[in-house]
Picture 1 (tube, rainbow, N blue to C red):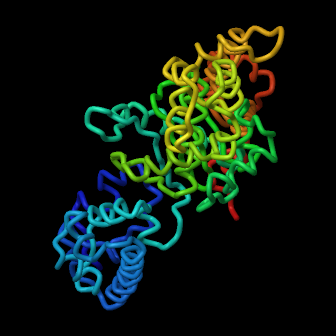
Picture 2: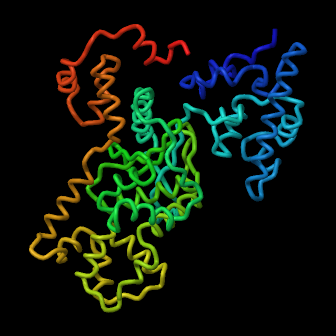
Amino acid sequence: MPAFPPQGHCPEFHPHLRRRPELVASLTPSFLGDRNGRSGTLGYSQQADRISAMSEIADRIRSLIRSEPGLTQKSLALAVGMKPDALSRALSGERGLSIDELFAIAGHFRVSVHELATGESDPHEVAVAARHGFDNDTKAYTNPAWDSSKVVLEDIALAYRQAAGSARTSAPRNIGGLPASALRTSLVNASGAEFVRTFADAIERSFDIDVVRVGGLTNSYSMRIGERVVIVTSDTSNWFYQNFSLAHELGHIASGTMRPLDDDHRPVGRHEAGANKFASELLLPRELVTSVEWRSADRDVLGRFLWSTGVSTKSLANRLDSLDVPVSADVERALAEKTQRVISQSTLFSGVSSAELVASRSQDSSARRFPLHLIAAHRGLVERGLLHAKTLAWMLGNDEIEIERESSSATHDVSVDELQAFLGLSEP
């Protein structure tokens, strides 16, 4: 019998894996070491299995090292808290890797432990990227509300898992590596030049990426829940902040900067700067910005431009500055004001109150939103008596009792076959 790692480093008891039972099967003691990478006494066949598994993991780690410019085996070891000699011996098959070491290495490369261990994507993994605020005093990106945001993100992930057999689970259109200009072209083709008016709908229509708008968040996030990709924004009345956040998260998705949900999610400056640049190019492409004669423009011209592009005065001011576009004194003064004030005081459409248009748009952007396919899946499961109404009520911002009352007439006794199918226990 092989010697199992001591309790606390066995997958079933390790703190990283207590909520991840699906990883236990893949992280077997055949290739894991104890806290120091020692694998214990193994029989011949177990030893052969361990050597084979460790050899495959070592190959993946070496490949990941080569993929990161400037990274060496030694610098990786130091970055993940290992001695260079220990990593060297692990990669040469002389020792195993502990769970802690696997998680540290996987975290460094922003891949799941499942993928590192098996070479396959983790079908249950939840990966996240966030829009971080910029602290002008420290000149650093921050996300102080991560702990409270994580609770909301876990609730969203739960909603998808509960409906996994009924909601859409397929991967969206692959936008990895595409420039902002390519995404803008797709959005314009699918939803028109003013796609930002219904940006969330346009994203779902163009890329099959889900968009969730919910309270309890101060930042926006992009998530991968299994194969499904989801952008999550706060239910703010500032639609221009929300639009930039949606574009920012598309930048994260395109550049592949998501990390496992259980990571600490300390901001990475180059990722944030890259996503901000992507968002600016998506919403304010050079040709659009320079099509306006800003040196002779007035507040009305500015207000109409802000309305049609769905951006803030601050975002436009930054973009004009980065493109070295000179502006009139009137526009310069207005760019220092609040976005909604400038638009409200502009003449957007003849005979229509600009202030009321601003109020309507603010109301729309602050409404809770979940993908229709997810809501429909939950409602169907609740009506069939397979799922409690609590999550559906949360998604709709409705009363749980009211949801159950609406669904009560359609409920029926659940058969054993239905319950087994819902729990994934049916015979193939």
